[in-house]
Image 1 (cartoon, rainbow, N blue to C red):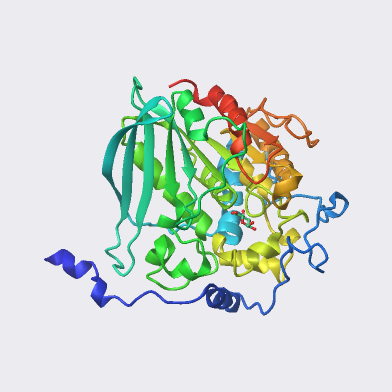
Image 2: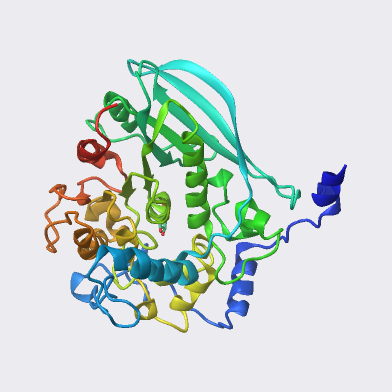
Length: 436
Ligand code: GCU
């Protein structure tokens, strides 16, 4: 029974540390030797001293962005080779250390189990629905169990492997559901995807990592840390969710219904941030639909519009990020960040990425223009790699899609939703994913 000796047993292992988000946030501030933070922007009280800014004239205190094509040693990047071998790794290192945190060098193995397969119809399309659980090996710390919740739906009549769009799915508390889409918004996105002959998948982020600071000593982050609090450059929830998406893609590589070279990732809001992080870090993802991702996603950290760095640094959201990110809401400022979000978009290059936003009314908090500027700022990297960028640095009017190139942008006239941009995204995505 040698392996029993090697792997710990639940009853012999100490339980994970129990802390509230406030306590964990405080311990991280202590590790960083920070005693105070600036307040976040208040999006609810326009008269508050820290009311969110929505005045474009005040939105750009730091208009000069880090240059994605200048190396740390000051040399200009002039070839794809230098981008891949030198500059991209520099940018990844900065995002790892200061922004999203590092995924541990070794993460536990995930064993996928198909727990159910059913034949159903979605609309009038016959589909095969597979329920899956990704069991994460917890033999090193049995006090924490992580089981990744994934559902894969593919057209039953497909003649071969199909492209799949995977969404980070919201789970609503019992009795509550996603607000219904406005009248006239067409079929649900899943049916739009099926109409292309493609499949779709839903990954439940909370099954990988809880969406709060109290949960950081549990989930996949807590499992690897054996129930202890994070170090300042450890991964946050966004990278943990993205890690889960990568493990789902590992599974797709083994499922004959899926063409794993044509898998896209989509998410809204906090999951829009996660979708962008997924695309940026895992180059196997073919395409990304990044909806209303805002601060911590595609929005430039250097913009003062809607949500700002200080909100992310606070105890309600810091768990999305590396602990180190908190510094930029306290002793340091936005302009001290070694990278900005245009470089996160650039990490997706040359793969196609679609940045989506809603209108001012209902989606101002995410700063559509700040996300547009990040998409535009990634342009030089796409061009260096022989791809087409947005084609402009002027914010287009609402509902004017910029979809000529591999970086795409569209602001719809709805609110905080991906909904109205699905048809435009799918038409553009067809260029890359092709038919079934
Ligand atoms: C809050 C938060 C955003 C986040 C959003 C969401 O509004 O400030 O950063 O994107 O929640 O995920 O719904």
